[in-house]
Structures are given as C-alpha cells and as structure tokens.
Length: 328
Image (cartoon, rainbow, N blue to C red):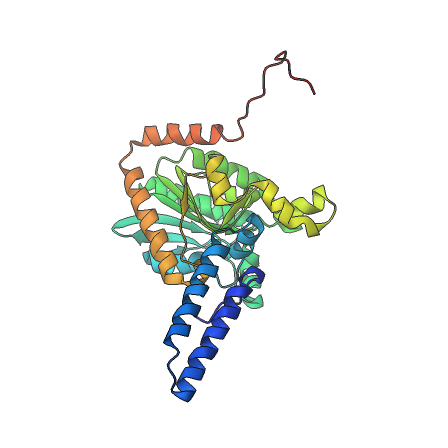
C-alpha cells in the first residue's frame, strides 16, 4: 500500500519524517554515526503523533473517516471473513453496487454480511455511486437479512455511507419507504444483529442497515443525522462553518458513547486505519467475533426486547419542572 496522502493536520508529522529521512540519507552517504540524532527525531515524531491524534477535533475525525485510502467495507470483508459469497439483486428492480451483500464465515460462524462500499477513484466511485445506496440496495439488504433469519444466520452490517442516494430515480422508487421498512423489519429480526460504522455513518442511509443489538463505531468514524457541510449550509447559510457544525452535532464515537447512541468505540492503529489496513482489520475482527459470540448466547426473545428498548431510549430528554423558581 502506498504512503497515504497527508491531511492538513498531519503535515507536521510528515515534515518531521522527511527530516528524519534526510538525516538517515546523510548518514549513509558520508558513513557517519547519526544514531543519537535519529533516535531523538524518532522520539519527536512519536510525541508529535500522540499529541495530534490524542486531541483530534470532530472535524478532523470526519476528514479521517473520509480518507480515500481508509479501508473500505470490502477490504474488511477480505481480511475479517472467509468464504465470502456475494449475492445480487433485490428481486424487484436491480442490483445496487453501492451495497454489496453476501454470506461469509466469521471464524467458525456463518453469517449474512451487509455493507456500504465506496470507490477510490472516479471509475470506482461512479460504479459504487460514491457509497450512496438506492432503494434496491436496502431491499436487497432486507432480502438477505430475511434469508439469514430463515436459516438462523446472524447479521453483520459494515456501515460506510454519506447517506442514501437522494436523486430522482431513488425518490421514484421510494427510498424513504425502503429505509422505513428496513427499520421496522430489522427491529423484529429473530437473529443476532451486529453493526459497525467503519467510516461515514450518514443519516437514514446508515440507519437503514444499522438497527442492531450491538452498534460499534471505529475510533475515527462518525455517525450523524446530517453531514457537517449540510448542517452548516442550513444553520449558517454557508458551508465554511462545517468544523463548527461537526462539533455541535456530537458525531464522534466518543460523544456518541456518552449519548448512548453506540455501544462501543473500536480502537484504530496509530495514525488512523488508513495507515495500517491489516492491523485495523485485525482489531475489528476480534471485536466482531467477541460481540457475536456473546450475542449468540443470549435467548432471542431477550435480544429482541433489549433491541427494542435500546432504540426507544434514543432521543429521550428531561425538562426541569415548572414553578421551580427558574427565570428565563
């Protein structure tokens, strides 16, 4: 894998790495001992990396979540699962390449795998529709989930989409209805359901395959009702306030844990998943296997009850009682 393109906030690290390489080249060229300088520079790089990645803003995490060299869903499928067999079509309209779905083995457990898939270049993005699924994608996903229910196979969703496709054709084929039906049917699926937000988790497009018993989110992924740019355009009439919108939306895994929207934040390799696909996949695989093992031990009626209560609790808030002396 080639060296990822640095994001703006990563450039200090890249500059230090460039200087480190210059010291090493100079040492080799002149046969001089620069071991002390090399060690000092390596320590400075590590310190700088910890400072930057230990204090990321919400907007910076959004940028990492969108990195074109970040592992996409099929990258994780290749590394986390075996015996992947993709199944196509919704039996109503067509096959949505933005939402590859199939059957695979996670360890010794066969399961249904639902994914969102983006592209890394223009050709791939056109084929995958930039990861934005049409109604047939959600109907295909539901068909496979019901197949999993029929054969007692747990369902795993890997979520990475800016949102469902909002175009005319999508509206003509009833995108809102397709997502709404998925929400209803996933709530009643009589098999364990596990979801992981691996990049972008945009609005109903993500929630349409995200009604799960256990919802995980990668450390630098985000899950939000609207993109920061769209929120900025609505509230400030200008997309330039996207960073402020990202903070206000509370869309990072750390914020979502506090709000009980997700159940677990999964760590990423140092510098983000885009810097080490293999390690990122290893961490996610272990999280998927341990949680699936736990869910499979839970009686299905108990799972259904907890799943329903979990999503009913979302959005609950309390107002102070009137007449308590407060003024406003």
